[in-house]
Length: 197
Ligand SMILES: N[C@@H](CCC(=O)N[C@@H](CS)C(=O)NCC(=O)O)C(=O)O
Image (cartoon, rainbow, N blue to C red):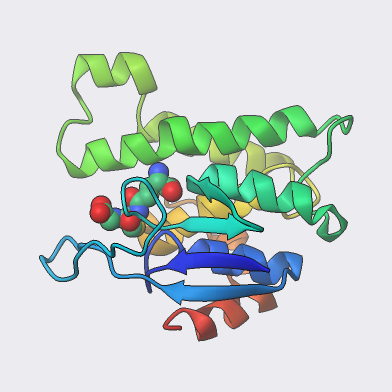
């Protein structure tokens, strides 16, 4: 049984979505976290080293970091075909999108909210939202999903960012159409119904 430590309407919501997508048996442990508005507090029962969510425990093994959890679950539930396997030509691009999300897209969004997007060191290390948006739009010009024909864990991660704050991706009809496709997925509706626990 998989346990997801989850705080409603947070970065762990997208992992419920993925658990629904892959058809995994799972339980939710609703977990308090400190929120930006000053509400909430760290939960001592949360196994995450920083008391953050998501934290996923599978058979006693702790997995943290959204992109790592996405890779872990799409590998483990390979029959759901939400992540190309080792040996598939799309495996490299898949890993690229997951790591780009964690290593560039989330930091750039956070840095943007902090008002530091134009800092030369930030630009040199990460580039910025224009480059991220251009990469997403270029991919969607080539196919309905980031990897081409099939929805994958990469779409789930990038779409979850735009679901939270639409302006983090370009105002472009290709992005709107992709978001509409992704937002219509039945697994997302099931996840949203479970979000509050
Ligand atoms: N890079 C981490 C970020 C996790 C994260 O920051 N989660 C927030 C909720 S959206 C959190 O738990 N915040 C509580 C805190 O900062 O103590 C991931 O994607 O898993």
